[in-house]
Image 1 (cartoon, rainbow, N blue to C red):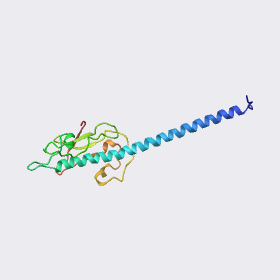
Image 2 (cartoon, helix red, strand yellow):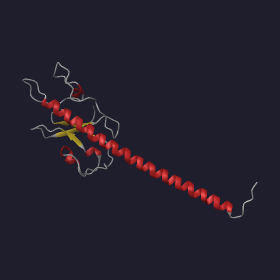
Image 3 (cartoon, rainbow, N blue to C red):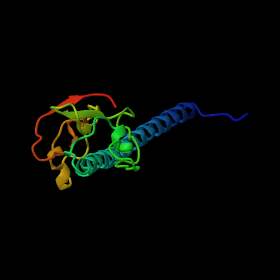
Length: 166
């Protein structure tokens, strides 16, 4: 058994406390950084998925059949397989979920109740506040992801109401 001088035991204890505190602080900083990286990644996925759905709604609208008035879809499933056609027409590959919440997107409907767009239900504040593509320019300086509305606006349709569901 080794003998310790009177002050050595206290110095070792202080060294261990400082080391544990530093490890805890570094772990906390790494966790915060990882959270930021994860949210930014989900934010990019939200922009992509919302854009895909907006384009699919536009494709559905523009793919009118002979003698039919252009129309918006009644439900998201209409984008996955267009019921107006006997042939298989897919405007959207998958029924994407909101990456910020993991839930279905909130549907944005026009005055006739047809789907005009989608939005997230997340109230978190976006990291991205500017520098959006022209189609998303109205996302600038929004306070939450719920304010990022991916709306297809055909000519003559201006009024929208919001309802949830898929």
